[in-house]
Image (cartoon, rainbow, N blue to C red):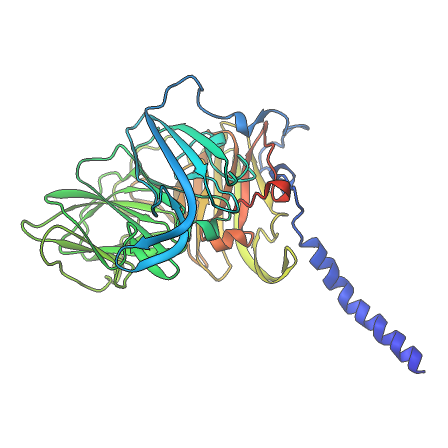
Length: 476
């Protein structure tokens, strides 16, 4: 009788544990996985690709002409080392040319930029991704998708033409939730002006900084200036101006059409996003830029600057500015995709927890959005996950059409980093005009490391690169 009870108990335990073991096993991300083998193909209602559609050009071949000389050449040496945060003190992290942020790269529109990355001592390897710059696919800097991570002692050279003027930034796209946080980032400005002021906001281990410094930071200026706000953090940031009004003149590197003056409002800069403001300093006075609250602010000009709390009202980019002609008619889209972000309990790569889903699926079994060059694409991005997600599609700028069903009525809102709050739905559109395999992910970088990643994949483009395995590629 006792033996029978033991057998029954063991059988009952196996009945409970067997499904758990199956789900655990199914959650493991295979070593050496290729993006071409992930998930399932989603054709967005358009024609399916012919058999063998992944046979064609390697993503590594999609680069500028090799015989063109560089107009701007930069050498960046990455190190793991201790560095100083002005106003706060030393910290352990990563640097580029012994600084964090790394050197600001400036180029004129049309320049060919050449950046040589030398990894001296970043132990897990690294890359450089040109956030918001629609580079050729080979230059996108995503480990395991467009290249292998650059290991200690190795060098990699990036080359791309600065096609669009604007405010951008660069950062590692290997283990980015750790490497960016600890210092591997910098500013890129294409066609800077003589009155530019840059405000790159970054948090190192709970210490918020602007341009690498903590507390009140000052910049000398007079007259009318262009303030280039860059949010390199994982969450949205409200920014505002105390002491004068402003205009929002660009979003994510794209000019705003006929921007009206703003008084008493903040503007939201999402994670990874950039907002350019034009403001005029009152004669003989300074203004203060609020950067999400707290002690770190930017004062522009000489003398004391006023201080005020964050305004209750906010600029709404859906209605700001005036309409202008579009380069395409969204009503004539050839493919339409759904990107619904959810969350559910279970395992991810063998770890129990609450994990992100895309259209009900967990990474890497997520939809792969399949396009042909020349397709006009619309996409509905819906967030039901309980948290905000800054969504970033590589290689393309997208046009915001609607938010929660309300039509965009202001200046055309072009973006590459879109803040999608919980229970929000956006409809966006873009032209598939940049062949490659492109990440489409949340730029809250820990979310990306937890699987909130999929890809836009062009017909006839392949990749020779793989995740994990001997290369150690971790393209979050």
